[in-house]
Image (tube, rainbow, N blue to C red):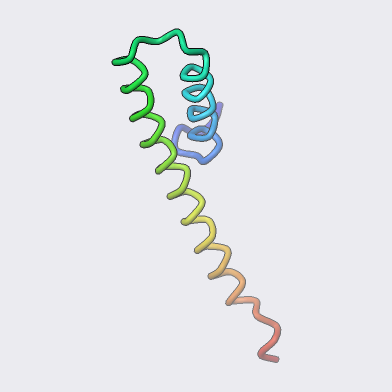
Length: 68
């Protein structure tokens, strides 16, 4: 089971949203709601990526071998 707070979960949700929007079978109102949900999900993906980047930068600083 995928963690519902993971990047992979959010990315999968975003892919489903995009697929539904691309099919074009939704009303305008449904499309708008799904689009907004997609924006929020994309923000969650970006936050996860930013957090991971910061963690990697911190780890890299700890193991900076150039200072030896």
